[in-house]
Structure formats: structure tokens, C-alpha cells
Image: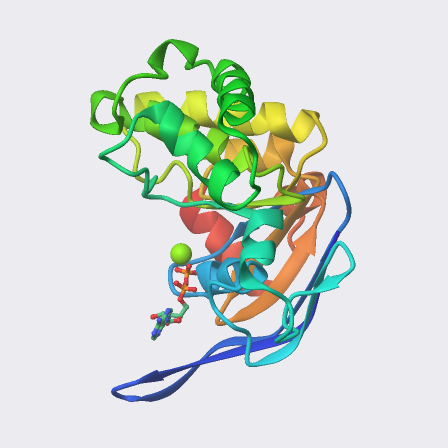
Length: 244
Ligand code: ADP
Ligand code: MG
């Protein structure tokens, strides 16, 4: 579903050129859940952002479901519709209702008729347990509820892949579980997911594969049962010691 090969990304900064991604390659199969972990600044967000072209990779190739997304002819809206992204800060539009947040892109990007978009959106709200909040405005919801709406909004595009960048990091602890539960349901239903998270319980239980990034590179990857019990790389060992 995702084949990223030899990705490099550079940022120009006041103190010079920063090599943020150094030859990163990752393959994700359909319905696979890959959890990406690693210290702050290791390039996790930059890598995810390259996968839906929020950042344009400077070198390498990214093919998603057969589409070369780095092809200049590849329309950016098409990429964004197929590759959904859920952010740490939910980024809902504050001035429209929960339902409208979910219908908006269906109508404007997918060209779905309003009645149909409303129906799909209500089903998605049901799925994330928030159908009673359709007419509410985002600031009337808790953080956990807002993030579940953001997930429903991504799902409304019927993406082929969903990327999550620390989806629970901005939440009060008691709301983390409800968001992880929704993500686990999606995984069970066969959604292809790449998830950057510090929630190691989720990584152990839900991930098919765990990837450890440090210093702009993938240092190690493996099945969670091997990765957590028998890490090979010294940096992985040190990182796990710090967080577990
Ligand atoms: P992570 O998500 O693992 O914390 P990031 O991908 O956000 O790491 O950042 C990787 C490196 O790239 C960091 O050194 C960060 O400061 C730098 N970086 C990220 N985005 C930009 C940008 N737009 N401009 C300059 N530097 C950036
Ligand atoms: Mg990040």
C-alpha cells in the first residue's frame, strides 16, 4: 500500500542546512498497522508529512496504492484524499458544527451530494460514538471527543491510508483511551495505518510492526513481540529504557 524508498528531506535553517530525513525506506502492506516511535526531533513528523505531501521529499520515491505521489503531475488534492492525516491538535473548524466539519471535504473534494454526505457523516459519528454531538460546535466537546470527530472527518474521505501524528499527546490522560479504542477498531477493520505515538501499550497490542527512528533514520524495526523484548540496536535499547 505504501512504498517509500530512500527518502531524503532537507530544511534550510538560520544555522545552515538540516538533513532531517536520511535515506528513509519503509514498506507498509494493506491493512498493516505500523507504529513509529523515537525521540523528539528524530524526523517522525517530517516522514509522515512526506507521505501525504504536506512536505515534499527532496529525494527518493513514494508510491501509495500504485500512485507515485512525488510525480509533479499527481494532483495534491488527490493525494490528500487518499492519504488521511490525524494531528495532535485536532484542527477542527471552530465556526461550523461537528457534522459540517465531517461533510465539508466530502462535498468540496469528493463532490458528494449534501444529503449523501450527511448520511455518511452520521454513520461515521455513530462509529466514533458521537452521533449525539452532530449539531454541537467543536469547543463544546472535550479534547478526546474532538479528536474522535477529527478521525471521523478523515474517514469521510474513504482514504486508503490513515496517518496519525501523536493523536493522543494533547489529551488529558483520561481521554487517551477513548481515542486509542477508536484507532484499534479501525485497525481491526483493516485500515492501513502509520501511527506516531508514545503509547507503548497501543504499540504492543495493535501494531503489526514497530519502527524506531532516531537522527533522521530508521534505526530498527520489528514485530512488537521481538522489538520490545529483544531490541538489537543500542539506540533502541537506550530509548526503550528511558520510556518504559
Ligand atoms: P519529530 O516529529 O520526530 O519530533 P520532526 O520531524 O518534527 O521530528 O523534526 C525533525 C527535525 O527537522 C528537527 O530537527 C526539526 O527541528 C526539523 N524541522 C522540522 N520541520 C522543520 C521546518 N519546517 N523547518 C526547519 N526545520 C524543521
Ligand atoms: Mg513530531
